[in-house]
Image (cartoon, rainbow, N blue to C red; front, side, top):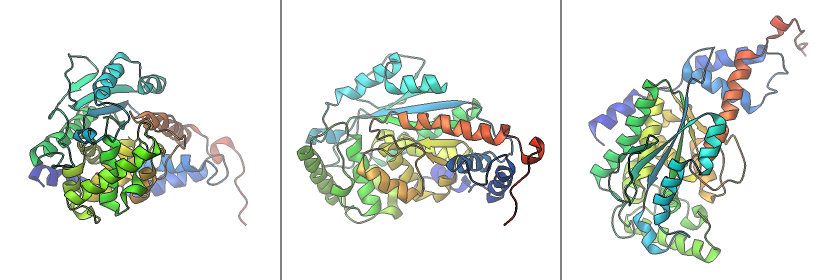
Length: 357
């Protein structure tokens, strides 16, 4: 672990529980039965603890869609060819993908990040060009990344989080696009938790069951190749370097930096949650700054959410990625903050409180 990353990790502090207690005291004074707003109250209290104010505000919203290719697609683990990664990036930039539609409704900016797409793009105001290399190595035969490539990919997310904070953004979502990246996420999940590959491997973008079984066998071989067949939480960065992806590494960097900068970060589906699991494994304090947007249909996603101790805000049977579920959750987070700020207290409304039992 390099010195800069060690410094970043040491600068991340847990959210102050005193602020969460102050938030709960106000919530209990609002004109409603105690706890009746359910998880919205928990969301509001978490935002208060992150921002350390009883007047929390959502000042700016952005979703970062990190894109990269994966060498493991050579092993027939996907339903789509790798060219789709580049084609979908162009779709994002053209405003025609699901994340564009959802983000427009949420009034959130979409920023597409080329961390390692095997293709080239012209300049575009919505594109950040930070290509580390043209996709990872085939992890069945070699580590996905070198140490230098891992550090460079993580730095992308760190830099973008710092830029967002400087621009006044305080609610971000991490999403991704990369044909083959559910294979990487499944390998990470198995390596971190010790769960068998067949327990954490799903259909990804639409594999038939026979192909899912093949994918699980490939992941098992990958883990054996890299000596990761037993849980490796203590060396999560080694797991990321060997079986991860450039976009997963970039998301890991963003999640770590957002915690340092006290920005609320919403993780999306299975792949972004794999990045969060890596970040959590090396710095558990980041959990205080994370929201889980939803729980996808990938079987490994719930396993990772349990590892993180995060309850998904939505259950919509999504399996798309792109940050879609995370940005849908923006609405709930904003509503929770508005309720906290705008509801009257019993005293203000001159309403009698509950009678003590």
